[in-house]
Image 1 (spheres, one colour):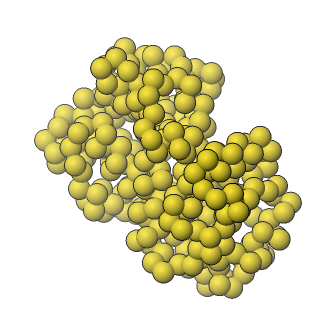
Image 2 (image 1 turned 45 degrees about the vertical axis):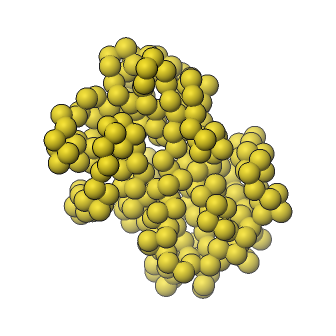
Length: 279
């Protein structure tokens, strides 16, 4: 069985180790390949890469930054959740068709409930309205966030996310804004989610001024490489509750593994394995 990951700057991804090791525990002969557009050509190569994988007999592919929304137009079917979120991170090739799924929302929800139990979500600010951001926003509202403000510098991207969310949630609970509005948005917030790429090895730095990390705020960062991002370090230094991206990564990977293989993975084992890989 062949699977893989398409994205930009993914050379250091632990997905191959996670999937291949769990497959061995399941008695499966599975290889998981990294298909990095930094090596394979321009981002316009996504369609060709999907064609190649399907022709070569792949069971499926994970899709990551920056393609989770762009891939939608290249698929035959979408799961209800992927359609509702407007983003896909898992493609399964089945019976001559491409089926799009989203396991990011499940991953974020599971990680949040385990890592920040009891955290207030009356008012939440999220940074990033891309593919991962769409999944996190959907998850937060589904978990009962009273009000969510999504901050993104791209007017079209944040507007599209607002329209998509409004199809499923009360519009009074949803707002989008430009980064210039971040100080006003975060002042009454219970929590902050970084769903932008800022903090990744290839996008280093803080996604907001550290001075905005005030007392009483919880902070979640979906970036898992590095496991302790500059944002998490700054938040922990300020005495705030934090949640890193490691658990979300493992939970979404376990859901994708089940879609690829039809086998139920040992998610706790995958979490422990990822912790070892990151140590």
